[in-house]
Image (cartoon, rainbow, N blue to C red; front, side):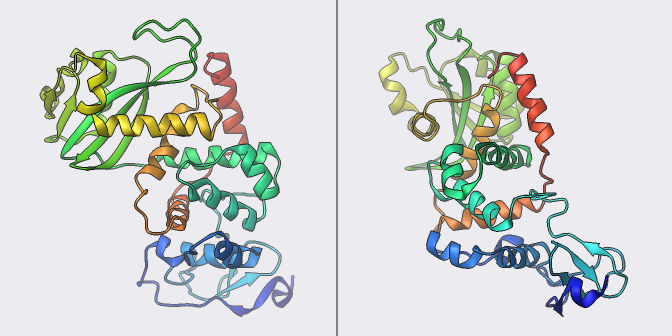
Length: 339
């Protein structure tokens, strides 16, 4: 194929490959949805932004390290001008092998993070113009990316308590939950009048082994865990975590003793009841919690679209799972009764 017909007429802009800016900062950040559509309303605009984020210091060929490349006109590829190696800006990223148009993918990811209470698949279907299965697939891809990434442990004073999510099926008694309900362990840094970083984990029970293992994996040694009087937390000092138990007694005092935890639990349940219409899957619950945690920890962002840039940055470091992966996962959850 003639290179002049297969590629654009100009080579990619090249700067010194040693000068690398953070990928999120390489993306123009719009102030609102109107500006977002103006910036990322076409396939070429989205591809240019993705190339800038993937190679912030300029294109560098993975095979020969040359810095001059040509954009293909009809494919998402960059061809090295020296050796002819073809590199894809989406390869090995969240958008790996994506068939959907880039401007629709960018809009879909933007809508997932733009609102503090999130969105659901039916809303994405209507607003982006895709079918429900596509909206569901990319919602799961986004949540899976957040669920699988490494997160720093909490430090300082950390309020910890359990909450219960899911509908009441009439079989739950005390801490023995029915099939539709699930424990969520809420861990949030106490910074005086405000909440710090948040970690959420779905747990099967409130036993010692389960709770202590999760806390040890999410809270830094030397931090202080502020919990209620549940005996399951008594072994935390052996793991190097200071323990400050507080027996509540009257359940009405729980909100005053642990205001940060109860604030987070209230927002989580409000999101489930409002945005998701009260429908959650116990199997996919950890993925849902990862999405809520991502938005909550960036609630102070000056511009909500900054979360989109951060999501793209994370997406460049993780290969998106295939539709088959999520189908098999969903089938497994169904067989286990976790739908």
